[in-house]
Length: 302
Image 1: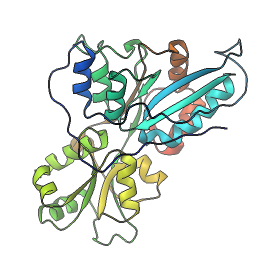
Image 2 (image 1 turned 45 degrees about the vertical axis):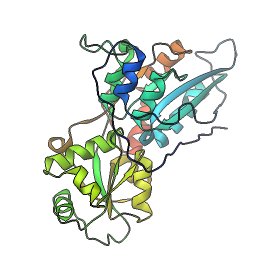
Image 3 (image 1 turned 30 degrees about the vertical axis):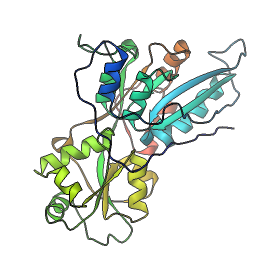
Image 4 (image 1 turned 90 degrees about the vertical axis):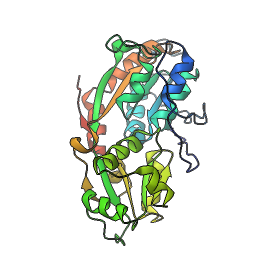
C-alpha cells in the first residue's frame, strides 16, 4: 500500500538568508532560505509489477524531495513507478522548495529534488551557465518539466467581494482585507511578493498593519482560504483545483514571471541510477497525464 506523510509548519514568517553562493554546503544553506524540520520524510510506499531497475528483487528505496504543490500528482506517479520496478519503494518528502533545498544542503538523504521554482534548483546546481553553486544536483539530469499558474482564491461566499488582483491591490492599500501568502522562502510566497511589487505595495508595512497572514508552504495558504480564516489567498492553480477553492483571477507572467518546476537527480543520491530513471519516467505519457489532470502544463515530454 502507498502512504504519504505531509509536513506542516508554524505560520511564522521566515526570510531568505543573503550572501552569494559558494562551493561549500554552508553557502548553499544560506541561499536556500530558512531551515525547516529536516528529515521528516513521507512514509514508505510500495507495489509490485514488472521489474526494470531491480531485476534482482532486492528491496530499494527512492527518496523524492518535492514541492508541496506536487503532492497529489506525484503520489499517483509514485504508485505507477513502483508497479514497473519490483522491490522499489518511492518515499516522498513534501514541503516548501526552500525548506527542501536547505535539507538537501544539510545532507539529508535525497535521490531526487523537484522544485516549484527555478531559484531553489539554481542554488543547488553548480553547473548552470558556469556560475558558482553548491553543485549538489546532477546538472545533466535537470529539466524544466512543468508550468503552473499563480491564482487568487477566496473562501466560500467571497465575503469581502475580492474579484481580481487589481481589486485586491486597492483593498490592501486601504487595509480592508486579510491576504494569505507563502513565507519569503516559499516559491508561491516569492511569486506573491513580485505581484505586490508590481502594484507598488509595501509588504512589510502591510504585514505590520495586520493585512497579511503567512503560510510555511502552499498547502497551508490554501488551508487558510478553505477555512475562511483570511479574506483571500495566493496559491497555485493546481492547489486551488485540489482544494476546490474559488479562483477569481490568475497572475500574468508580467506580474510574477513564469512558474516553472525543474527536477533533477541529486548528485550524491544513494540510488542515483534509479533517480535518473525516475526523472525520465516523469516525462512519460502516463506521468504527464497525472500532471495535466492535476492542472499542470507539461513543458517537457519524452
